[in-house]
Length: 439
Image (cartoon, rainbow, N blue to C red; front, top):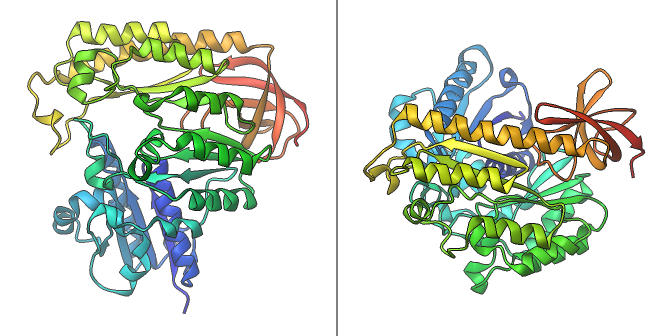
């Protein structure tokens, strides 16, 4: 009898790739994939364990799904992902509803786990990423292309190296095969991801091989789809990389650079931005090399030892840099990290105040920049319907599942490109009217 499986995915795009990989392995092994939890004999909750709120969300979702062991067909509840990797021993005693735990380094062994009766949680760098070549894509019309696993940055506040292991770059031939599968499967946007894509190749070549990989991807993709770059740390943004972005046919003029802070004292404590380049100078260099580029960054507010003048430097930077997109997170101490043991932890109320000031400043920037786009024509990719007569789309300026949208009117089909005239904005989202057909 064919067994049915449902998967609930939480967390970042890298988790999405893990989820699709597990479903691909199980589908090839004869499992039937369902979106309906009540129909599934096996339910997998792929968790995030990066920061406190993500851990809370994961536990809440596990408890919600566990109810289907009583009211549905569920026989086996599996918890995978970062929370499982880090806390499987304590979770096993506090969540008896969970039958099996799977580590981040054993994703490719999900079928082995379900054939046995014991959890599989080992070293995170045991993972064989070749399994990703057969994953089931689930985010059409975009798809995630993971080029590396793990991270060598060792930032003081971060547990990712413990959860995902050290940097392991994929063989470029494998990356190209996965990219071809995405294109063949109808993906119109390939989102290149890793914990830090700019480190690609450092483990096997001693230098970043990202520009060379992107040239190969651009040649493969041509005008069939967009290529978008996420999570490019500032230390390895070279002139060569910017030249590739500027000249490529398929690469969006978009870059996600997680700066996290700008003050040298805080950056030094974080163990980040070792090049010492002034962040404003970096932004100016990027904009000179790639005109019209859309930039996203993230910041941590209330890091231990952050005083008012440290925060003010970050606020001044945001106002001066005029970034298209910005995310800010209130610092959350994570057990086992260097930052959690630092003195001068910032009070919760003060962290919230600073976070609000930063986001208010960015909101004014976004609203003003959106007004400047009115009357322009932008190429957009339609993701799907929003409401009657309205469609959710994105230009090169917006990453899927992260940024705002372009809400368009017109006769369109999801998964196709169009030219849209920007007619206005509604808070963060742009509004537009379709002018030309798809290609």
